[in-house]
Image 1 (cartoon, rainbow over the protein chains, first blue to last red):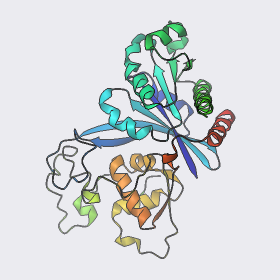
Image 2 (image 1 turned 90 degrees about the horizontal axis):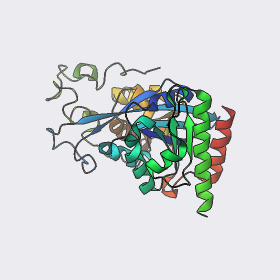
Image 3 (image 1 turned 90 degrees about the vertical axis):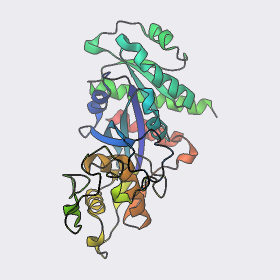
Image 4 (image 1 turned 120 degrees about the horizontal axis):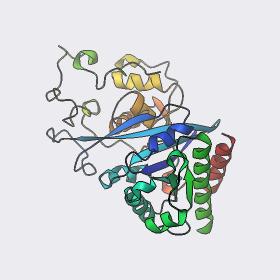
Length: 182
Length: 141
C-alpha cells in the first residue's frame, strides 16, 4: 500500500477545504497539531507542565487512485506562523497547489515564497468565484512575481472536474521539473 | 467507523481504569496544558522513528496476543486500522492530536502490533514512475 500527498495552500477562506472536498472520497477530515512557541525543540514535556498550547487544524481528503495507491490532499493555513507544519507536510510531497482569490492576492504571497524557497513544485490556481476571473493570468503572474515556468490555471474549487484538472496540471508540472533536473 | 475510545479523547481517568477515576492534575482546563494530550505517551512528543502524516497503518495479525493489556488508545487504533489508514486519519477519526498519534503508532509498530508503509523520503520527491501512476489514476477519476 503506497500513499502520496499533495499540499493545498492559500489564504483564509479561499476555498481550500472546498477544493479538497470536491474530489475526496471521504468528507474532509480535520487533524489537529498541538504547538507551543518552542514546538520544534521540545522533546519531553514531563518537566514543562505549564506550557500553553495552540491547536492548529488542518483539513484533508483521500482519493484512491488504484488498488495500491492512495492520494491525500492536505489543506493548510497560509500564515507564516504555521510554517512549522509546512516543513513537516512538504517532506516527500508531490507538490502544492496555491489557491488564489484575485481579490486578495496578497494572502498567497507567503505560500508562494515558501514553496519557491523549499524547491517544492507548485502551481497557482485562481479560484474563480461564480466563474469570474477578473484578472488576466499574466497580471496574476506579475503580481505574485512567480517564474514564468510556474503554471497558472483557473479553477472552480467546487467542481470535481475542475479540481481534477488542477491536480493533473500539478503532477505534470512536477514531472517536468524532475525531468529537467536530470 | 470510529473505534472504542473515539467519543472522548483523551480518555478520562475512570475510562482508563485508574483507581478512583481521578484525572491528572491540570486536567480541568482542556487544551490549556500540554501534559493532558501527551499523558498517554508518557510525556514523549518525539516518535521512536519518523512517521509521515500520510504513512499507511494496518493492524497486524495479532490473534495470539492479549489485547486487554493495551491502553484504550492503542486498542482504538488497532480497531480502526483493520483496513489501511493514514496517520492523519487515525488522528482525525480517533480525535487525538497528530503528535500523539505519531508517538503511539511508532511504538505499536516497534512492538509489531501494526504494519506501517511509507515512502523513503530521504530519496526526496516521489520518482517519475510513481508520478506516472498518480497521473493515470487521476485521469481515470
